[in-house]
Length: 605
Image (tube, rainbow, N blue to C red):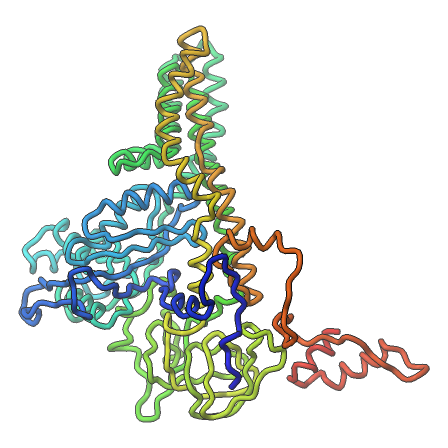
């Protein structure tokens, strides 16, 4: 196989050896998958989580120790200012070594000492700030919460707290006769084994986790519905206020009910922020609404809560679409792989139960897949035999042990022609098998593959703030508290009446939210970095792209460093009297059933 050490072009504005930087960057973990990894503790010299010797007893207490990385997707994260303040709130929790929230990815990543805190506590703080986990719920089939609580001698709340103490558990529900949990995927074998053991001892050996469909409305959906209903309510209140026949108490009741319904989420997030010593834009808008009510401006109060709800929905939808367009050409790993075994049939039970499958990639329909040979890529292990058929994407890094074929390496190298491969050749995850089939012995899976390290690089650099963004973020740290204090002062200094001063104060509170200012820098840079990754170009941060915009001359070697990744027809020579269009039609007809790359080029021409 061709050496791939020069497959990618790196742009860097720092001194040092590029190859050494690339090897160091491969150690970065994959943030999109909910995968905890081990990070050595400062006073921990062991490489494995410490499990107490009495774990074999009948009790459910298992002593775990060590610092691990956990990450998962979150909803409602559409503002760098909110991400910055939420990170500070989580960092104050016991056991948290560091917390990083990515607006571009909509994910949170924490390093936590599991002996001094739980990941569920961090998730609870984020949920209170309006950022609930973007992970499906799993139901413990065969587990009855009443019987489990009776066996443990605890009430329903105590049972929920026991479940939340299990490593990897984000949230739990123990009402309505069911036990539902939200869990992050654990790739570390020792920690996963300890977590599974504690889960089994708590819920019982006979349980299994199965994805469940959510029947109710999400918080953001309820907020949008409330904003829509506020529009006719505003018109109704305006009509009632202009009428002398209807008591003012009716107006107040309708307006206050609308404010409470449409602004419920905003008020809750403002209160949660103050409890966590975070002053976000929700505090500003909540103060403005309360001030409008105090002045008797009921329509204005309704308009503020309605506009905040609409703006939050539109901003969130826009960022979700931006994230979808920023997935990049490298994020191409299949969700499932075909495992083959020579000595026994594949089983989905045991170690491949839903207890150890990444719930972020599951849905109820996929759980009912009848093809038992297909398993989630997160459950693959080193040394397993993986079959890849023509047209499929290779899910692991490994060595071919059976079959011959051709691999399309264009996404990584730009080479337009599929490269022939045979037994003994190495193949990498993310490449498409143009002709097969092949049986591959896996040598690296999941975040251990080279493709995952490249994806990781792109995501890591997307979240690196530029110099401009860093300045803006430092400014906004003091901006919101400053506006809360300075707005009343300005109102009373530059107006002639108390009422005008209060109105000016409320206006300043509403218009001073820093969200749009903070979004102006990271989103364009993240989009540009992802687009560059699709061409095999990895730039180390947005500052590099800004510097590259000033480049006047670029010197490249002659070995095809920059290619389109596919062959094209540069010219056609025909005999005298013949037409190019007719020759192309004949050639396309001859190549219609061929799978050669040149055949596809002729047909597309």
